[in-house]
Amino acid sequence: MKVADIMTPSPLVTIESNVSCKEAARLMIRHNIRRLPVVDSDAFIGVITCENLLKCAE
Image 1: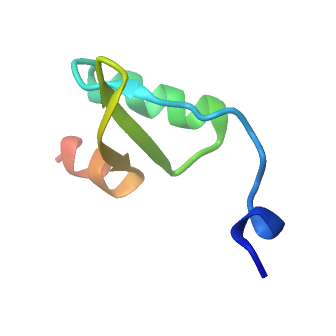
Image 2: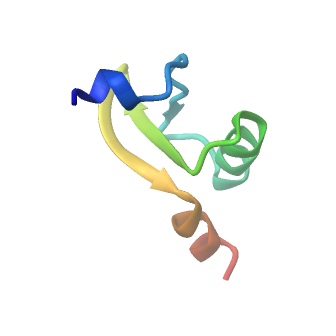
Image 3: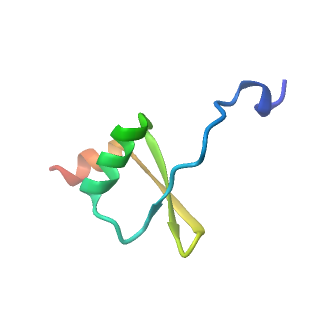
């Protein structure tokens, strides 16, 4: 089985590295996603997760 056979096809939602955690949370809620790729000048630099955002709230 290939990844393409089981993936969820959808446009990739990303966020720039200089955006606030609050806006990242809003974007994740709006798109019903738990992981959000972080980009800097269109280059992938990491991923922020729901768990990461919970740490921001502490």
